[in-house]
Image (cartoon, rainbow, N blue to C red; front, side, top):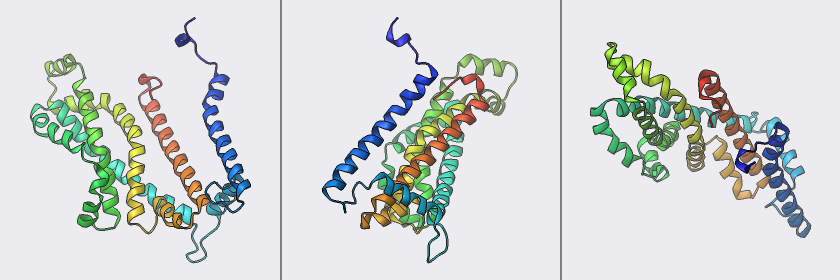
Length: 270
């Protein structure tokens, strides 16, 4: 039997999925032991036990000055910005993507502009956003919107163009208006792709969020990481990085579950 036709059993699949994570943990543990053996005061690779103790304190101990648990305050602030940025970007992308894919006039007018806009490095616009919108919440949300929207628009518009033309013709034959075709024919077919596109854009959205918070913020996960870096507090930084990774995984899992429940005909998906 060819290798491409062989599939692991469920226990073997779980083991294979866990192996890379175990390998990374072992590599980190060995590196930490080597550095701490050479210099017990080394801060670059703190021992796993140190990270666990730090994490326990960050999740449970309130700040002595403000009385709030900073990690939860940072998490709420970052998730709020992320949700606003991704939500607004998704809404704009859905509207413009359907317009470009379905309406020739809109496609002619906006497709080239969106293609050029997608080539602009979003982080290069960060100083401009701070000048135009100030250092508050708006500039951070706008950066996320600018960062992910062009990609989503291009992806969704292409998905609309890929819809078999026969479906559009049949809907028109039955008397459907452009609005009805958009709602009843196009929308059900591109909503799964929108969710998939958001999942693929989450990494970039987190990057833009962390960058914006690092430059100008008073609370947030990115702000806290760049605040403590000057003290080489790697135990805190690694705790925050692991927490951000876990949040991203949970959001991705929630979107995947939503897609599977809402559109069961898609199968496994990404």
